[in-house]
Length: 143
Image (tube, rainbow, N blue to C red; front, side, top):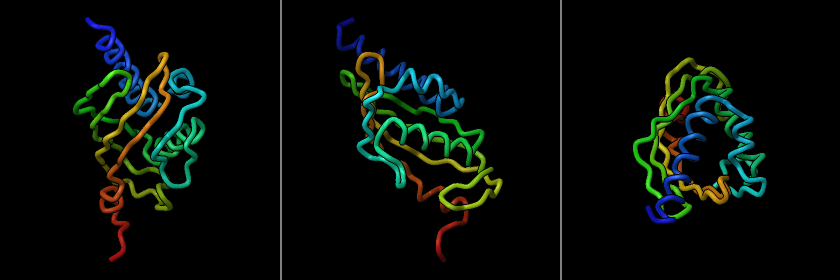
């Protein structure tokens, strides 16, 4: 394997751990290990800061709203140290989400994101999440 292939495979493995163990398992100690202290989110969600603390806050809010929050990764592609992942998140609405009180309804939404991994740590993120579909599933769209 070339050095670039090795870097790409290692980066994909780190992103898979973040998806399964941090987002899906709430392992906040692992979050601290996987994310660089100077992490930068180029596409932060509303009311979230674009730094490591903002990412952790978002992850915690999602797990509070959807305690069974988890993702199915459909595919990953890596070019050097940047990994693009297409996945579907699933969960059951058990807590406040975007000001919507718990409904008990199951939700799912698609996400495409790219994360840069340098020195074994996630340093940057760009992403698009279909949160509009979540509002529709929760019957929270204006009529």
